[in-house]
Image (cartoon, rainbow, N blue to C red; front, top):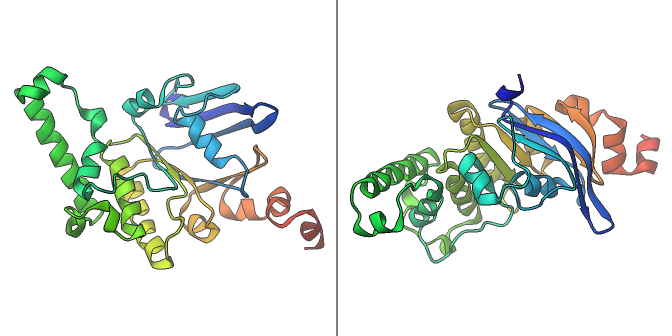
Length: 261
């Protein structure tokens, strides 16, 4: 059964010196699911993504990606296996166009060596055609046609966030990690972004692990939520199950307020 689970976290712990950032965190991401990872500031949400994507190495625990433990693999190796990620701060090359930024996301698809790429022959030509086609598909999917030749520096934040999402999508990911993708957006931009997340879920079938602070947005879209507090998982389930959990109420409102409610 586990081989059908795209991503499973088991007993994940992470220490920075004397600080316990994560303490025995465990959950699974199911096929074609949007799983929300929420919690107050400092709860360890981004730490989880950093461990999954190979930026941090955990003190203990497993990260099972399609049944294979990827702990210890470097980030670029995990990306080649089919895991893509967006970041809270839009990490685009501002002097490059939208098209060029998306082409950079296709590095995992390049199979040619320096020599064949230099003479642009055979497999190199085939790679180039495939990559170009893939990028154009994503531009159309995210409705970025009018921005394709615009430098990233001059784009509105909402569009830059979509370009960051597009750069992850051109990798044809098996799992997509989203780190607060809606931060800084206006409500209208968030609604547009939500529409594309639902298209990814229903049209592409890509499971997503989504870190988010906007509880209304993630509550409307996520199939399930996992709540972290001080590096520990305190709740998991549907929105209704999570918001009625006393530990979640305490984490967000404080013990005194929770007791008064």
